[in-house]
Image: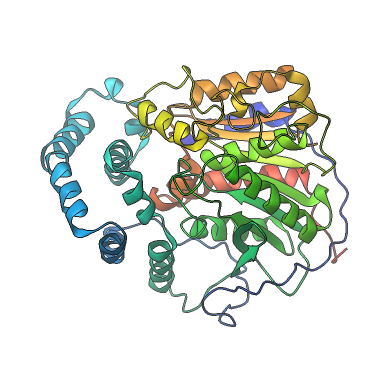
Length: 454
């Protein structure tokens, strides 16, 4: 039923997406002095879509084994023991009791929408994530998503599925005032499409290395869609509390300029992000549309001379840092009070919360949004059960009134950033890849596939 609903959503919104661009020739990607840990170990790109399957219990055991020494090193034994002690009532009593009651005793029609569609494993994991989001200190959470844990965990998953070497080329890139990861099908050839991605994590946690499996899978879907040599640049912006706004926006702008230089043509660039990363992408667009005072209060100015991308694809965008439209939902793992705390930490207390560049959803100036829009518009996918849903829909209405081309997929029973989470949790392959396939199809509508290398 969920798959049929997704199809209906796509058909309903198809007429809102328009995209017509001519293909062009691009220079080779610039070389970086920094490469992944085992250069030369990359195998020819796969012809079939990369899919490592859902996370199983063995993966969870390995992840915990990789996480433990990093927590000891970065957090300390006393704080870890204190955190585990505080979580024991949840793990021993609240988690099993609520899981059994809501899943097996409560009448089906009274169950939260996400539980109705989720597998037991998906339900169990999301309950744990919900508790962690509300109770774990950010300095512990950021270790979970760090390179030191995420990268060896991905190596294990690749080995478990028969990949002795990296199936797709990737390398770290350190530029002036920004850094991230380049992922390419063939690093020795010019890209015919470039995706610029900013990860989520509440500005306080997350890394491109944690998103690497998601992005590698996305690149393989682009190859399957017919692109000869797609490339992805994933930005690693500075996390809070190491820095606050406008540092992250400045890094996002520098990263975008770097992507433009590599792509050679802005009409072949798509910008994307999820959650907090999607907010940075929106701030970037407002900056390009006239918000040039990055270090001030984001006042409207003339459009920026740097060209805008052709398309923006946003996954569960956190459009407004603090909003009364954010509503707690028993299905979602986000919690409003802690979400707003993360938002205020990102703002740094140095600028108003309703600043348009720090909180794009606060911008109701339709002419500004019209100047800031990508030429083929903005496509947004989000869950109907997520905390941010109402705020996203209010913002989408502002875009439509401004004349921006808007495409949407409202996932029935979906929660926050489900296209990312489902890749690791869903046991059904079609459900696991549905989000990526949907946004890849939106890309195909905008960016024509080059034929015969032309």
